[in-house]
Image 1 (cartoon, helix red, strand yellow):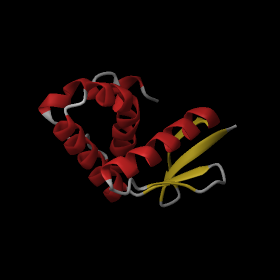
Image 2 (tube, helix red, strand yellow; image 1 turned 45 degrees about the vertical axis):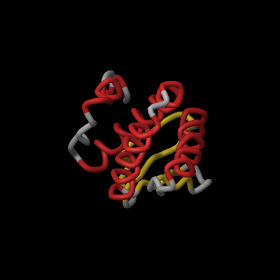
Image 3 (tube, one colour; image 1 turned 180 degrees about the vertical axis):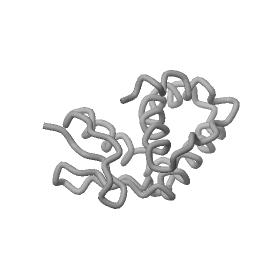
Amino acid sequence: MGMLFTVDGREIWDRGLRTSQMFCGQVLLLEKLVETPSGIDDTGQDEVQVDPVALRAFLRAVFAYLDRSGSWPLRAMVRGVVQAGLFLDYRTNGDWLTVPDRFQDFAEGLDRIT
């Protein structure tokens, strides 16, 4: 059993339950850290609704926060969740978000997320 990620009722991603729960939990923590809503809404009913505009703003806020913090351990810890967020952003907006030069490693391997 998995969870569907949707935008206005349109399926954009279908992931396993544990992967989805891990992603949503990490996003909640990042929202608190960067003080910006993510646009990721776990409905609690095997569906996660995604707001494309909010998600893109959230990802930009995360990159800005990481750039200011300069913390390599934090950067390493959030890399995976940001990569999944970039993938969802692509699926919702149809184009890849421009990743800041200092974070090009975050864009590596996005083609492996399915």
